[in-house]
Structure formats: structure tokens, C-alpha cells
Image 1 (cartoon, rainbow, N blue to C red):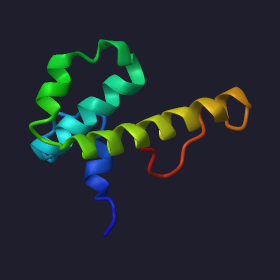
Image 2 (cartoon, rainbow, N blue to C red; image 1 turned 90 degrees about the vertical axis):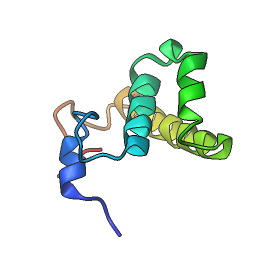
Image 3 (tube, rainbow, N blue to C red; image 1 turned 30 degrees about the vertical axis):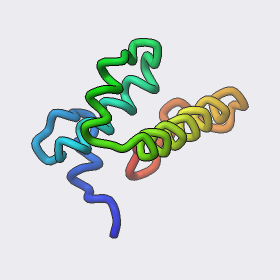
Image 4 (cartoon, rainbow, N blue to C red; image 1 turned 45 degrees about the vertical axis):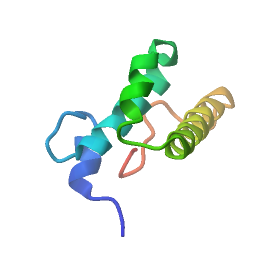
Length: 90
């Protein structure tokens, strides 16, 4: 198993048909969570529940919080450069 390079490249466009509807919802959730979590409404959550169980939503949210928080910690401590990226930035 691994990440499909085409999907990694397409994450900049969650509407890309390479993604399944479930993957699009996860990308939407991640985008809103990291860019404007206060914009997440009851309607979003209701729609997301059509694709994910409550347990899965919690797991996704915990991972998003960890990834977003880690990025902020690295920035806060000055441990990375703004243009620093790995081969597959996700």
C-alpha cells in the first residue's frame, strides 16, 4: 500500500475526478479544519456523516489536529523554512 502519486498531486484540486466521493469529503473537511474551522456548520457535519461514522470523523479530526498543530509548532519554533518541502508534501 502507499499513496498514489497522482492523488498526491491532485490534492490541490479536491474536485478532481481521481478522488472518490468519500475522499473529496475528507479533503473538504481537512481544508475547512485547517483554513477556517469556525466555518464548519451543522450542515457540513450532517453531510459528512453520510460518508463517515462518528468514530471515523473523530479519527480524521484527531489526525487533522495533530498534523495542523505540528505544522504550527514547527513554525513557532523556527524549525523549518517557509519554502521547505519534501518530495510529496501532504
